[in-house]
Image (cartoon, rainbow, N blue to C red; front, side, top):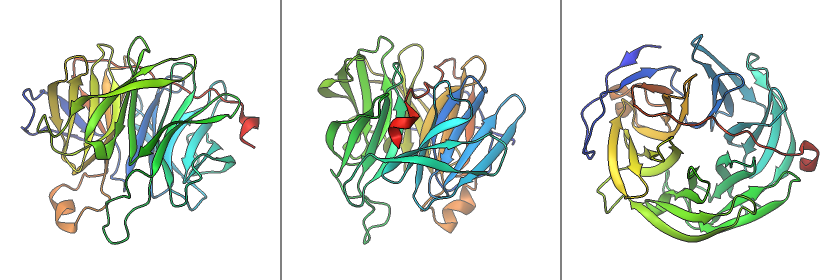
Amino acid sequence: MDSCCPKKCSPSPCQMNCSIQRVSPPLELGEGPHWNPLTQSLYFVDLYKRKINKYHPETSCYTTATIDCCDPLTFIIPVHNQPNTFLVGLGCAIGVIRWDGCSNRAEYRYLKTIDKTPGNRLNDAKADASGRLWVGSMGPEMTDNPGQFHKCRGSLFTVEFDGTVTKRLSNISISNGMAWSLDNKLFYYIDTYKYAVEAYDFDLITGNLCNGRVIFDFRCKNVTGDPDGMTIDTNGNLWVACYNSDHIIKIDPKTSTLMTTIEFPAYQITSVAFGGQCLDQLYVTTASHNTTDVQKSKLPYSGTLFRVMDTCSTGFDGVPVKINLCSLN
């Protein structure tokens, strides 16, 4: 794939002079980027197309496979010590797939329902430093208002090694970005319809959350777009994708400062993750879902996976899930 130049943009006080490269064909709804250090590859999904994708930057090799199911495919995370084995979100449940990263189809099994609320589905997921799975849910799309979702019907759950499911937060509208502070004492979280990034005091041993508060308010800071996926860098700064917009932002969670904005030739930015051998490449998933023909003609790269170079930041490897697969039967 070729490169494209970032445009000047607002509302950022500082526009980075980054190199932005297109490294995949446009997808419908790219989501959930996860860097796997064992394969030196980025994995992500095309949600409504039920496709898993793999990008290997050293060879520029891009592969994809379809999951044989009818539910949205919401995330893909490797399973610890299980080669070619991944945990995925399928509708309201999680499942396990095996994929060699080359074949064009992958079968799933071990389905376990997480959210039993009628009409709900899972959305973003990540593993914390202990390998515990965190996965959030959201309500259904409004039939009379496409692109908008019923509010306060979702939840945030954890899944332990033995398969135990615990509800951590309720009354969530669209569960999205997650990250942990460098000392694992804070959990950063995004419920999109709050238009904010929140922080919770966090106990890594128990997974308990308390003392939730807003640390960055999109509307107060005049940031356009809806907060979506999120990652953290080695300096403790958060990188947040802004859906219904063409940019990502970098914020300092300690001071609530907007540090940087990077703009893309795409209408819908969904998530971010660091990757590459030195973890200094920022991967950004985007979507073409619900874009008009006019929008697609203006920005035909909506839905593309982008690689951002020269951010002067580094991140962390994606954490695999530690789970007893037999517990999902």
